[in-house]
Structures are given as C-alpha cells and as structure tokens.
Amino acid sequence: MSNAVPLFEPITLRGLTLPNRIVVAPMCQYSAVDGSPNAWHAQHLGGLAASGPGLVVIEATGVEAIGRITPGCTGIYSDANEAAFKTLLAGIRAVAPTTKIGIQIAHAGRKASVHRPWEGGHPLTETEGAWQTVSASDIPFGDWHTPRAATAEDMARIKAAFVSAAQRAQRLGFDSLEVHSAHGYLLHEFLSPLSNKRTDNYGGSFENRTRFPLEVIKAVRAVWPADKPLGMRISSTDWADGGWTIDEAVRYVAAAKAEGIDFCCASSGGLTPAQKVALGPSYQVQFAERIKRETNIPTRAVGMIVDPRQANEIVASGKADMIALARTLLDDPRWVWHAADALGVKVNVLGQYAMARTPTWLGVKQQLRPAAE
Image 1 (cartoon, helix red, strand yellow):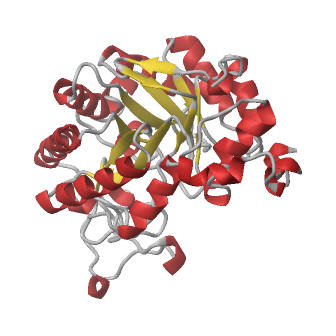
Image 2 (cartoon, one colour):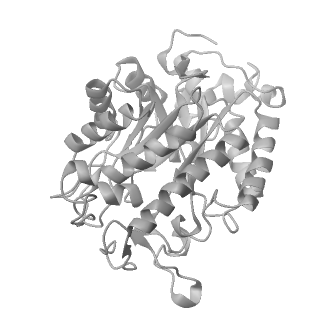
C-alpha cells in the first residue's frame, strides 16, 4: 500500500494503528431482536469490513433497554446481547481478519420508544410497547413522548450502564469504543440549553450542562483499557437559535480530552425539529477542522463526503484526521477500492474478490464506477 496519499496513510490512536483514514460510521440498522444483532448485521458489517476500511464502527448500541431508539436497535445490556455480539464479531473477523472494529455506546433519552424509520419513525403507542423515556428535563422532542426528567437515581443507573457496556465491549475484544454524545440523544440533551432546563448542578451554566456527560466519559475511561482509544461523537451545533453552539462544543471536547478522550467525530444537529441545517458537500468539515485546531485532538469528518478526492483533500489539508462514511458506503460498499483507483493507490484485496480487481476485468479497465473516473 502506498503512503503517498493522505487518505490511505495509517494513523495511530493509543495502541491502535489503523491502516488508512477511512472509517465506516455507525449506522443504525433497526434490525436487532431484544437488542441482539443477527444475520442482517453479519452481512451488513462483514461485507463492509471485507472491503478495506481502516475501522468499522458498529451502530449506536443502547446501554440499557430504554436507551434504544427503536425496539429494533442493538443493545449491550444483557448476557444475551453480549453472546450475540461475540458471534457477530467472530464472523466479521473470519472474513476480514485485519479490519479493526469499534462500537458506539449510546442512550437515546427522549428520542427513544419510536418506530423504525421505514415504519414512519413516529412514537410507539402503549399497545405497541411504548416505554417511559428519560431526559435532562421533561421537554419532549417535538410532539413525541414527554420524557421524565432524570433523577439522581436515574443518572447513577445510566452512568453505571455505560460502564457496564464498556466492560462488555472489552470482554468482547472491540478495538475502540465511542461514546455517543450527539444527534439529540441523552448526553446531548444534557448539553443543550434547549432541552436542559434543570435548576440543579446539572443545568444552567455550561459547566453544569456538561457535568453529567463528562462524568459518564470519566467513568467509561476508568474501565476501558489504557492501550485502547476512547472517542466521542458530538453535535457541534444545534443549528437553532438559543441552542448548543460550536463555541461550546470546542470547550466540551477540550474538557473531554482532559478526561481521556482520544478522538472526536464532529457531527451536528438532531436536537430539535426546529433546526435549520446548512446542507451541502462537506458541510460539517468546518466543525472537525475547528475542534482539531483548538483542542489538538484527532478528529473525524462526516457529512456529504462522497468523492475520493474530496475525502483526500480534507485529510491532506489537515482539516480532519479521518473520514467517516455512512450513506456513501451503503450506496457503494466497495468505495474504498474505487477511492484507491481514483487516487492511484494499490490496496490489498481479499483473494475471494481478487478477480474483480484484475486489469482484464472490464469494470476496472474502463473505470465504470463514477468514483474512479
């Protein structure tokens, strides 16, 4: 593999070295049963892992049952979940033994207890198995369920659930761990003044609103191995008046870095239906760039990154250290190959797929894929 192209250069985070800067972003599949992954996840993740990314991150996985977005979301709160993940990981590593695998642990907070997106995404009814949601304050997300404001007991239980999830992830042998602190889910709900109206030590000032998320991060870092990276995904802005801002996000990441965070995936939005997002190619890269510059922490850029040259420029210019792709990879699971073609890099391909990479294969010779034009 050539190291002349920044996108395909290795990167080291603590004791983990990734062979390139391409990350499969955590993508909810809404296909688990009682939190446990199954054959769907095996084919989805196994196929992506076999295509050459530096890291595959398993979807937002609930640290407790009521922390799942939908009844179909993965969880890592029971022995049955852990056993199912053990089987899943064994299968992925059998087909992609050199690909590193991470997991994102999460709590959906007030955005839990809803239908899968293709079923409408609206809140579950009581007869459909709805559960009581919990948040920083008793403020609903739009016209969804009204959550219960988290009590001290709730917060202690949830923090312990994050710790337990991290311990399960370590037993399973995950290579990296990521705390979900974005997209309007529980930790983000504590951060934003739009969803956090508490009057105790966990609401009001920036220091108070960041207190619980930082307590969770500190507790997770304490049980996660020192030689393995711990990261976080954040929403860099709420894209709404009076909401969470990039200025606050920078301060939050700096505080999380002091507690042992090793990288930040800089996303945005998801907190309020009133958000007004300025969509466009690379629209969130600005956040990764600023966070990296002002905190000196490695960052991942996400959001409407499709073209290999676009991705390579982001890394080459120092705007971010890694690129995380989601829908781009759903559309083209062999994007890593096609990116290598476009950038003139030779990558190793599993023997079973090598016939699709020979010079005599018309797809390569004529570069039929748009990414390779």
